[in-house]
Length: 391
Image 1 (cartoon, rainbow, N blue to C red):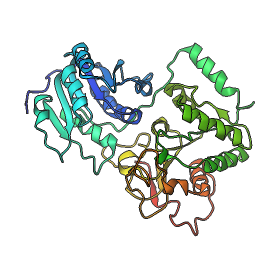
Image 2: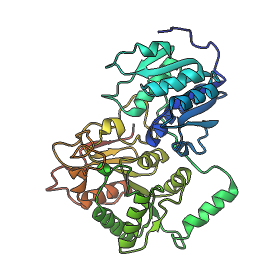
Image 3: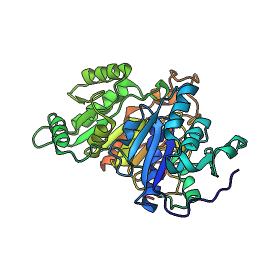
């Protein structure tokens, strides 16, 4: 490995490369914040896949989001590398993947990155100057990214930064009016429900969402649905909205990620599955109920707002609260199996979620709203198995 010395002066420009999905990009903002705290005058860009940059909307730590194509040919990758060529004093590869390292190698004059301790790192020697192990089998994704902080010589900061809508008064006034239209006068408290994940194996059942919505409306809350523009998501939300016994505000497919985050910031509660928007809700500081089935919470549980670096928030098994997040696991001895559903493919169902009783979700919502909960007697997995911790 090239052991070239790190830059002796604070860098003027830094690139943080995260070529993965929206949730990964969002969690990598903790590393960006760490760098910005150490070097406030540095101009920081993130290099991400096109289509994921929305989660960085109005991030105060960033200058730009630079996009590359997810399914780029080698010709296109080389063209991107030429455009990036040595534009940054430092480049950080947040993933132990060849593509992420390639863009970091192209972009940075000095380069750091993660390596998988279970795999040989020979090829990495020629691309990066310094390495940190990605202990992905036992730590949260945020902790993995922050492993690069000491390599850079910066203090790790466990703060994930959610997107926003900025300070433009015209945009804010239009958004305010749109959100106020369904809340009445005086405005009733808002709960945001995100019913549709990207993959079916993370999906709760429609009847459960309807029972939850009916309970929320009976308590006097206004319910808003959040979600993206995919046709299946739009159709699912339409059916939920039309089947609810009382009206809900359906914003699915209508808001940017920054606008979605702004709506969540104004809510008293967010409920969603294992998806990128649930990570956004946690980062916003809004009380959040996250529904988890087969996914590994140690690695992917929503990182609570202001949770300290180096303190892992979630064990492998157990439902409970950490800071502003209540992680509710489905039931079963197999949970979490860490697989893609019971049939091991993206379109599979997960019985730990399809059999998850709405009463357990409502009780978790009550915890986060400060309302009394019914006894969990007879529940095969007690509602609160983890102590309440706030970091």
